Image 1 (cartoon, rainbow, N blue to C red):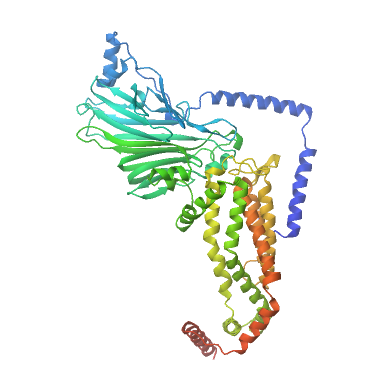
Image 2: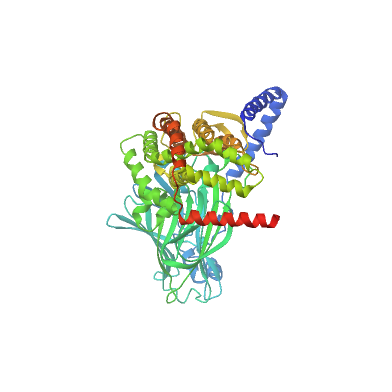
Length: 629
C-alpha cells in the first residue's frame, strides 16, 4: 500500500471513506432469507464453541488415568507395585481420590488437589474482572500444573501430577499450614508444605523429602516443571496481552523477561524467582536456593487465535523447567508462592526485588517512576478522585517543566527572526554546501544564537514523558476507577461501539484519544509554524509529520488505558496555554530582533572548539578549490 500524506484533504477523505463504508453496509444489508441462514450458521458455531468450552484443559494438563487400589485387593496392589514401585503405598490410602483441601485468609483462597498436591484454584478475594467475575489465577486445575519428574532406584520414571498426596491441615498461631505428603510408608514421603499467613498474598512453600534416599535415583535428573495459562481479566485481551510476559531474576539481583512474543527453551542460570505476569495480576515462584539452571517457554495464545477479542479466554501459555538438586539423597527447597496483584506498593513490601515485575520502564525511567511519580500520585489520590489526581499531577509536571518549554520557545523565536537571512544564504550559496554551512554558522555566531538550544530542552523532557508513558498503564490503583465517561481508567473509554472492526483501530470509539489527538495537532501546528522553513531535499516533510502524529496517536491509543490518554490530552492543553502566554505576554519578537542586531555589532570571542571547527572548514574549502584547479 502506498504511503499517503495526511493533509486536510486526506482527513476529509478519511471521513468520506468512513461514511461510504457505512453507506455500503446499509446498501448491502442482507435479505430476510440471508438473515435466517446466517442465524442458523451462528447457532451451529455457538453449539460447537459450547462443546469446545466444556473441556478447556490445556495441552500441558491433559488428564491421565491415576492408579487407585483397594488395599484388600492383593491382585490390584500387586499390579500397582509393578507400575509405581514403592509409591504404590500412596495409591492404597484413603486419600487416593480426587479431593480438594481449601485454605484461605482475608485476601487469598487456595484449593489443593490430593492428586499432584498442587493448587487447583487460586482466587483473589478482593478483585473482580472487567465483567464482574471473581479474579482466578488458577481455576478448576485446568490452566496450571506443577510436576516433579524423577527416576526411581527400581528403574521407573514417575510424575507427581499422577500420584496422590495425603493432606493434613494444622495451625501455627494465626498461620494455616497444609501438608501434602506423597508416601511410600508412614515415615517416608515427599512433602509439599504450604503456609498461609493472615492478609498475605505470599505463601510459604517447601518441597522436601524424608527417607527417600533408597527410592529416588540420584543418578538421574529430578525436574520441577511449572506451567500456566494466563486467564483473561481485562476488557481488552489484546491490551492485557501486551503486558503479559514471563519475567525472572538471576545472579542475585539481575532481572530479565521474555517479552510479548513467543520464546522456546530460553535458558538462564542461578534463577531465584520466576513470574508468570498477567499485567495487573501475577503468579510468582520464589526460591531461597536458586535453581542452577532454568529453561522457559512462552506461547502467545491470544495472538495466534482466530477468535474475536471478546471471545478470548486465555492470553499466554508459560512454562518453566528447573532441575532440582538432591542433598544426601533428599530434596530440600524453601520456596514461596506469590498469587496477587501486580501492585508496586504491595510487591515492593516483600524486599525480594519483585518491584521489577511492574513494567515501570528501564534505567532512569523506572527510577523516576519509583521515587517520584508513584509516591506523588499516591499522595494526590489519597484525597482526590483518581481522574482529578491525574489532572493535578499533569498540571504540576507541566508547570515544573515550563522553564524548559520557555527556553525551547525562545530558541524557536530567534530562529524565526533569522529565517529570512538564512534563506538568503541558502539561495546565494545553493551550489556550494561548504560555503553555505560556513556562512550560516557565522550568522549564528554573530547573532548569539545556538541552533541546538531548542533541541536540548526537548531532550530533557523525554525521560519525564517516557516515565509517565510507563506509569499510567502500570498504575494498579487506576484499575476499575471511573472518571467522566470512562468507567475504567486502566482500560479504554468507549463512547460508541462500531458494528465492524477497523484494522489497527478496533471496534469502538474512545473519546480521550480523540481529544488528545486534537490537542497534539494544535500544539504541533503552533510549534511547526514557529520554525517551518522551506523543505530541504532529503529532509522529512514537517507538514506531513504534523498531520501524521495525531492520526497515529488516534489509532495507537484507541485501545490504551484512558488514564494515559487523559494525561496526554491535559498535558498538551497546558503546553498550548503555556506557549500562548510565552508568545503573547513574555516574549516580544521585536525585542528579540533588536537584541540579535546588537549582538551582530559586538565582536565575538571564539572558543577553542569554534576556532578549530572554523580552521577545519577553511582547510576543507582550500582543498576543494585546489582540486578544482
